[in-house]
Length: 176
Image 1: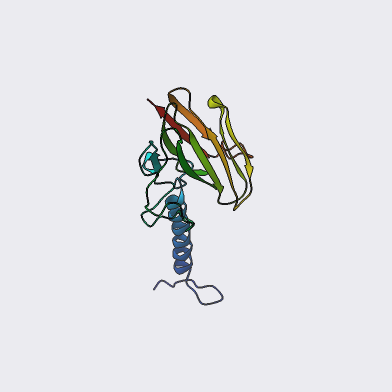
Image 2 (image 1 turned 60 degrees about the vertical axis):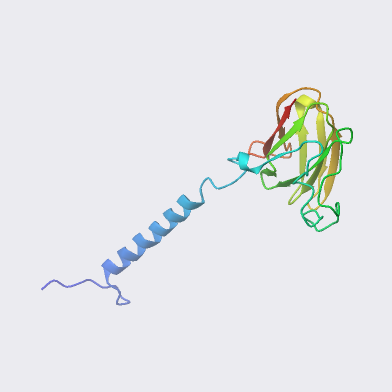
């Protein structure tokens, strides 16, 4: 009759081997399911917003007339800015992401970006349009207003440390 070897604690060798294999399998599954889920590494267009004059700006107002912080924006829940006034876009900057990561605007219509640093320090830059917001501390907001003078797609990015290289970028699409 075959005997099952046991260690000094009385646990059989096959049980130890099975336990080690189970732990390795769980670690492998954990790595597999967490890989590639960062929104900054793989920005999606479903996070895009369209900003046009005379339409509600989802980045600024909600149906209850408040922004995401609860501060009153407009009691009607609509954006009252005209083409001459432009549009406002609230941009959240976090760990290697911008939200929204795609902004659509019209040529000749002023755009105001309100950057809020959700964590750490972040800035906002569009080199081709000479637009920049200086480094903003965590929990703070900074603003820049500019008027796009040409159509096209322009990358915006964070220049702090390796944020841009780690995927903290977005796209401004300027149309007619």
